Length: 161
Length: 274
Image 1: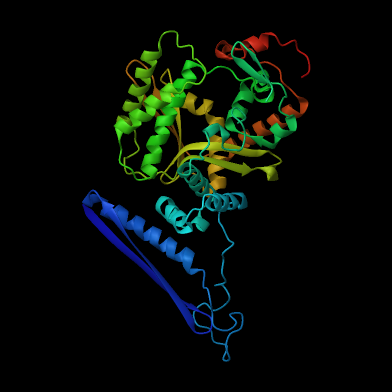
Image 2 (image 1 turned 90 degrees about the vertical axis):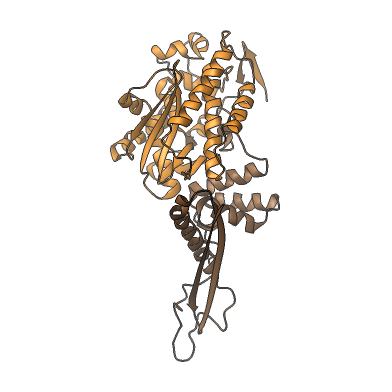
């Protein structure tokens, strides 16, 4: 068995001479050495998107991030662009609500849902487009025994499509 | 729900309101609308359901197995023909109401599995190719064009944005004719893909599983949807909405009537307004 291990780390500057950094590592099994190049590219994409989606949440910052300190200097991109973006989802509002509802009702671990999105699409839940979010919703429903037949996916009864 | 049953056909007593049908549209509905508006009326307004045909069951089980095969790749599970055969056998048993097989069920079942085995051998999709999407429901709000919300389920989107639709057929298709006949469906899928991803699809593919004595697999490829194809689809959707407004449910007698499950209902139609 072959194992490939990858790590991606990023450090960014924040207002008030602050900075934060985040890194993610993961291991993947390969059945064939010829898969290294493809798997390596995939892991890089997965890890980078994961770090990028999480590092936007800057959490606590010393002082008021809206005001630069005395000399007007800001470290890195201290121009207010690092505001928390918790509410921004790339999918539709309806899909966002459904993902949250399924997670909540089935008491799913949010980290596991995030990991599922990373495994399947190489990006975090909030970065999924509508097509990908639809796939994630189907997968979550199926894992929780709530998947609907093809002709009932739009909340309609059979034959209504 | 109240319903009447006659010769295995079931009709819901309360018709679906026209206003409701105008809010959404799908490739299936548009194709039925093009084929025969009276058939559309029986199927989507009166919601008369008919017993499943042998051909429909055959196609459903083939689709079920292909879906599981695609899902397994998506989940990075190894190809397991034995498992797929189990899915096939279980799916075949789930026939719902009795199907008229004309004594040919064993042959049909053998044929369905043979064509799947042939597909797994001949498919251009590599075992390690990760799908972009499998059996996903998508909708596209076309309100800015004065059109309904388009809804649909994509069988498969291959890596790189190639939309695939699986077809089981009795005869080998002519490529140009296959693209012409499936144009509405493919163009609907293109719109759904673009809405769902914000990207233009790389191409469209029809994967035909041909159930001849010696099974065959034919792949018909089409490029991305062109602007004129989108315009044609939008004109059709306009006709759908306007026709529903006028309750324009007239029959279209032709070759298609021979296999139509609503032939009996059609012949009783007296030409009145609905």
